[in-house]
Image 1: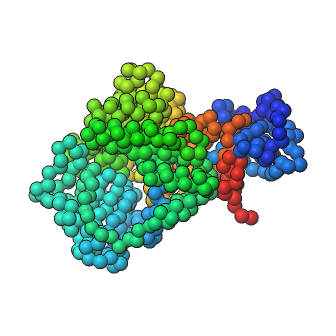
Image 2: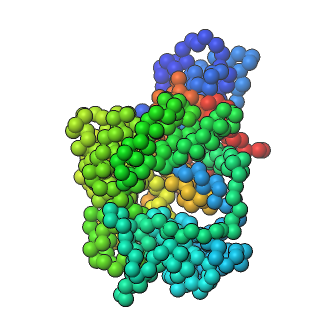
Image 3: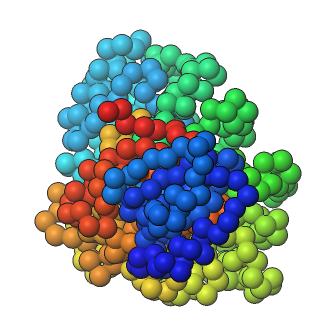
Length: 573
């Protein structure tokens, strides 16, 4: 980190053809450029791009009578933040009713009982993304517990790729002791010692067809609530987000917002594509992405690649691990050799990677466990051997990447593989994961220090799935909480940090959510740092994230957010 020397300041404020539209001065400007230089002022032109970065005196000389001038009063200015992994459909999860925070099994059962009261017998009660790692009991509600509160309603307690069903849901879905998983499927139905279904389905669609009492939103409802979500993203400093596993319908929604000049975040979608269908179907889906006009470079809305699912969930006990998970009552694991769920064969994975990267698009796969991460990176290595440099050029990525073997980190560095990682999982789930895996295996959990040291580009995300509200959401999309977690490695309800040797510095945590994400999301030429020629995506803070007490970082308030030089969020005085 270096303060801006006079020579550098003068270099950046060389004579320009027109006066700036906006000058912000007398602040602490964290440029987050290659050397993390600190300046005092920024000038923005009529096109929303940065015209100059330097000392206040020099930059103010560029103003004329039409220039808007704002004195920052010593406050800190940063590049707009980015989230590498969101699901904006989260805006619709509370369209019908507010969903309370559930901290224990009693909360879950009370919610189910409440939904039964407003439903007809036979109506489906669905509970989504309440992860067992975050419940006090650290387990699924049992089939019997769900039966007791909903004897006449099918109940599906769905967490990521796995679900717990009550008896009526099992019956409607056709899951009996005679049920056979289809050949080629990675799914598994857990059974008890007598061969009866426990209710737990791993990577199997619940297949429960039943009506629901929830009202259905119109297209206009979806439009308005998604705008509301994006405004809340702006309020915590986010100016760019990546919609992972997007759909063409969702992308059309973003295009409509852009056409109406109402899109307030830069959007980088990665449409989901089928992975284990017959190859012609998979190939056709990828070709549709390749041919889409929005794959062309555009700083506001660009399809950057595709996404598939390689393994199950870390929070549900189905991530693919190198070593066995171990028997666990919490995760419902009875097989001591169980290593998780692999959803794509190695041969098909190579086909998918070859097809997507040949088009210059970013391939990424949900890969949570260290075995899934190894398989994906080994596949990248095989494809790159056939066409050297193709993996790096396409910004090929690993999504989630929670557990990483040291060999995988070294290969990622060599190949130029990027990582889309969610620090918030450490904070929310570190306690349960540590209790299950133990200290030694947890040394491989989110090894950010090793990745940074080996120059692997890691971008920070949230995997926001449900609700609007940066702390109450599932998962919390507050980037300051994500940074704090990456710096402190502290997990809630755990009495000590999780392997502090893997922690980042404050500067590195800021890079995680700015310039690193810009590279990961193919937008580093336009965003990610405050440099001449880049788009003026900026945020003004109420504190300095480099010097404030570390536990105050999560309290950071964004006073103002600019997108391309235009204010999209401002705190009222």
